[in-house]
Image (cartoon, rainbow, N blue to C red):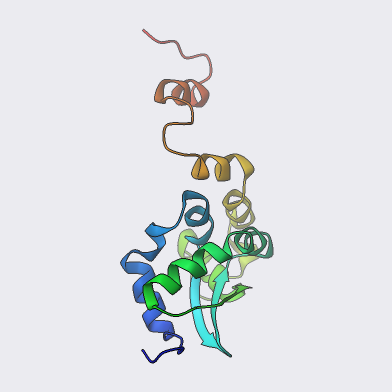
Amino acid sequence: MAAGALPSRDALVQAWGDGLLTKLSNRARARFRVGRFLAVDEGTAVFALPNETHRSYCEEVRHEVEQVLAGHFGAPVPMRLVVDEEGGEADRRRRSGGPAQAEAAEVPGAADDEAALLDPEVLAAETDPAGSGPSAEERLKQIFPGAQEL
């Protein structure tokens, strides 16, 4: 890669899949793991996320991701975060097992899946340091109310 030149979309995708995502903090990794690189356009890497709410959460930690990318590629890699309408629809169809031409409104629970991505409790659980959450026993009691330990 020439000095000052941005990596290609393919190079970004490969590096991301080969471990750059795992170099992020828990907070950034939980937010960015559902996105994908779409292109390199006008001096920025374009990264798509499933909805506007998720995009705004990712914007809070975008700088950390840019630092990891710059460290890997040896040059600044500015990012632009966008909403991925097409990718979001394809993911919902794939999860539902529906045909490629299925509409989002026909996919049961599609809206619930998006809401679960940013559920505050889910985000907190994914971004808390290991060992800081409830124990396995406490989680089982939450899942099975009224259960007793023997």
